[in-house]
Length: 507
Image 1 (cartoon, rainbow, N blue to C red):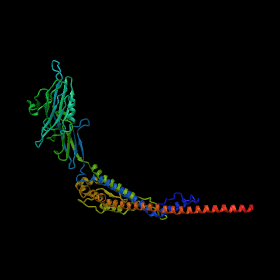
Image 2 (image 1 turned 180 degrees about the vertical axis):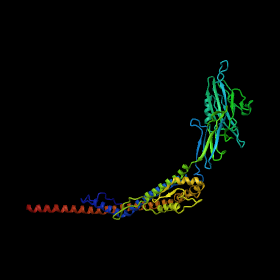
Image 3 (image 1 turned 30 degrees about the horizontal axis):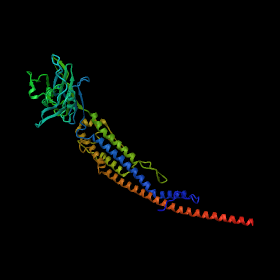
Image 4 (image 1 turned 60 degrees about the horizontal axis):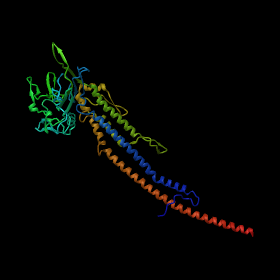
């Protein structure tokens, strides 16, 4: 392959490099004039479509929080509890109705627990506990589940394990999927070892500890110290309370939470009351304060009042209005038209300047509000306070909206937030653009294809330019060599003529 001339004009002294550079630059402008413009325009359009997609997804996500059958069924809840003592929390569900009630917390839910005290020395002062166990296995059982399946797990004990290490093994065991927790306390005369079941509620779990392995040996304690059988070691005292019958052990039964609502006693295995009271959820936090009335001391009942929260409902629609106006502003920014100077585009408009697809979407949304206005029980969007402004934005007359909601909340919900209400219709229209395989997705695919085409065209032009420059360098290299040889010959002739002339003069 012939070598490419890299510095044309060296031989002849002519500035062929400037000529080559000018010719290549001229050809590059000619080849890339259309490609460069089209590629840049495609990049701008891609950015615009990405911004539009992001804005529409954000808009849809926001307004979807303002739609639903009971989304306008908002309530204010007030109780007679003081800020310094909260016995329960209460929240209104979507199907809540205005109501008043009294609530009293009688008992909190509690998990079953067992505990034993282990003394280090006997009454004579002799050491009887080393806190170093013989090897073996502890099996922690919680009884059977509702399907009669045994709930238990094993803890392997190594020779010399202490109570503290056993505690850690129990609490971190991968097999302890039941939430059982162990605690160890160093006391003045020994140790306290306790287990607490993972579930609260009466009869939720039946804690037992069994063991297998070697008995006590010199310097090591037997795992039998930690054994407790629920069936044989739990009895009932004269008051009907369950207690431990095994020496040095205590037993505390699990219990349900109990509250009284308008004189009706309700129970729950947890402190949460989710389904017992229509429209509300109550979480018990503390037993009610004590109070004395007419010489009798008992637990205090707290008054609860639930009323409609018109302001909160209006805020839901205002959120839709604000999101809509923000979207319209984005449309305006993206589609702002470019200006021209002497017929040349200044590209100073939006990324989607004059875009028909954005205009079509905007027209569809406007039509849903203005031309798609429906009536329910004599009400429509505008009699409920929605206002369409000349600049294409929306406003909400909260006074008119509140009045409409008070007069006929069902009709207002049907117009705005129910299935096939205004917000649902707008959300569905936007989804056609943002969904996978939707209108914008198809457009993004098309733009990528266009960008690939112009990139390939640009790469091909660069190859042609390299070939063109190489041919110029070959031609001007040859010309440089030819002119250099002429200059050499001319120099030789000049020297000969000069020599002859000098010789003639001498004769």
